[in-house]
Length: 583
Image (cartoon, rainbow, N blue to C red; front, side):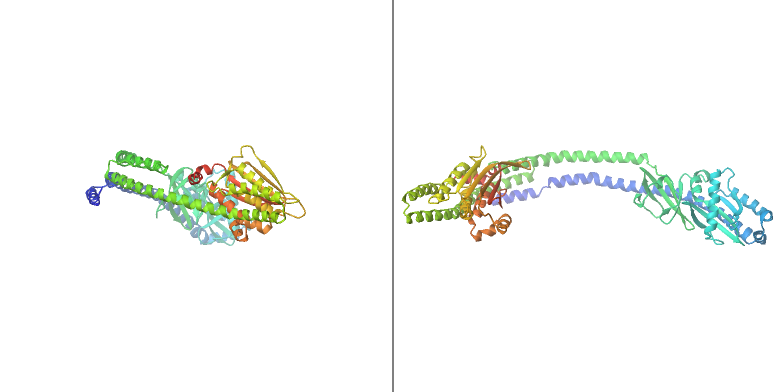
């Protein structure tokens, strides 16, 4: 396709509207107006209903508090105008025994009428705390004896506390039970009225026809309790407004309104059970419309977008798996046609680049491995030539012939650059030949012990890799006081659910120094400049063959010990290494 044809096709396609924009417009046009209208109307209706219910509940609470204030005002008027302000009450305070009782008889009659007419007044008392005597008038003659005793004990405790005398109403906590009390005192004679807040809160539904429960509180503390206050904390509150809020407790929802009574907070709570049927039906209708629009959108999206996209993804997966000859088919829409065409052109270019890059990478890898092997061979060859020179200089002709024969075998093996891996059995045979070369002309001949697990003979290793470590054993492990003994073991191990090949080379020499072990195990490249090129290059070649999962461990166990840990199966997954092995 020429550049002009491509420009014409792009110009033609740009005139149309994209499929994604059509779908988005369809969904928005159907859903957003309906959703917005419904949510606006629903929220407005819910808010209006909540406000009406809260106002009704607050009005009922206000009527209750108004009645409570009237009763408290009546008590205050009785205590101050008829008791504290009258001379007869002062005279009674100075009297004792029956004489005082007769003097207070009229007060007892008025107080009894007061507690009978005021439903919230628990008791009125005329007492002298110093003499521990007096008269207590209960609001109901039917009160249980135990309750009357509790009220009497509370009155004595309040008198002993002494607060709020001749002033206003005071809050007193007696045995964790809240009481409101108002007291006047003349010459040690107390006239007082007591309101049991717990009893009032428990009886409001009966005495005041309230449908909501009432709780008295002060600050953040609940003085009385109800079902909704059990286990209550601030986190249960939500939807807080200026005049009402909600509490979710015990899987139930409560509508809460609050009012003030002096220093107290009076809280009214009712079960919030409002659930209008019409609102629910409207929700179902909107849900049906949304589901239908989603179904229509999904059908169109599946036909116009999903199926072509799935085909594109499947083709990409096959291409990623190595099928570079595959080409992406076109779709039913202009977007997918353009994508397919562009992607296929990219595949053609990438295929050419991949071949060129792959060949360059193979060449670079082979050059790197050859250079590493040459570094190892140079060290070995120089040692062999040095031995031959020493033997020839001493006139040991037979030993020279033996060394030359063994050296020719090693040269044939080490100078074979067409293989980057060799089976373990061949490598170990070369190790034996090497040690035999070392033993020529020596009085104390070094020994080599092999222990290879069955089935490991054909395991591939880099050529001259184990031989390099054996050479280091001969170089650094030989001691004057003992014969050098080298052992090589190879077998399979299973760790963490995975199988590994374990190869260990040990000698009975002086071993590595602690500093060298630390450097070899934690930063092996740092020893390359110290002359230990063979150890470093052996691990590098092993990792080039099996990947970075290979590890080399260095330590001392009766002498120097070098261990290789090679993950099984990794080499088979490395296509580049297999290509290198094929030459």
